Length: 120
Image 1 (cartoon, rainbow, N blue to C red):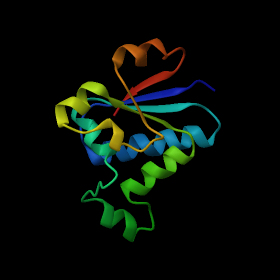
Image 2: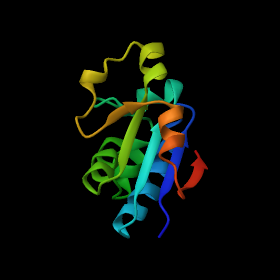
Image 3: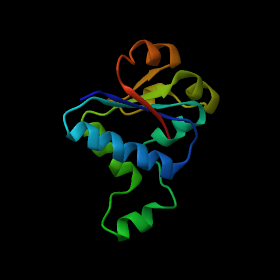
Image 4: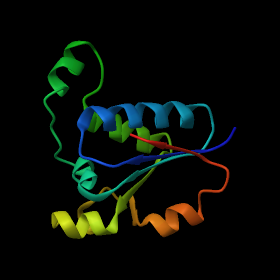
């Protein structure tokens, strides 16, 4: 199965939730999946993230966004924080989950290979 690369281009929690869900499903099927959070979207990678939709998700028996992020990482989904976005937001890469890495568009495209490329 071809790999899947998803670019999250804005800090929209529900788009990120969809990207995480799709990437986790891909990883559960045994295929590679990665998510690149570009620009301000790196704020979605904060460990203390709480979003308005979390209460409704939890009430329906679904994971909060932070839980979904952790589950995706546990399945092997690669999460990449945009280096420029970290600088833009003042976030410290050292404070990211150690299972995440930093990178940019050039490296992302160099490693794309035959992956399907989606935007969220």
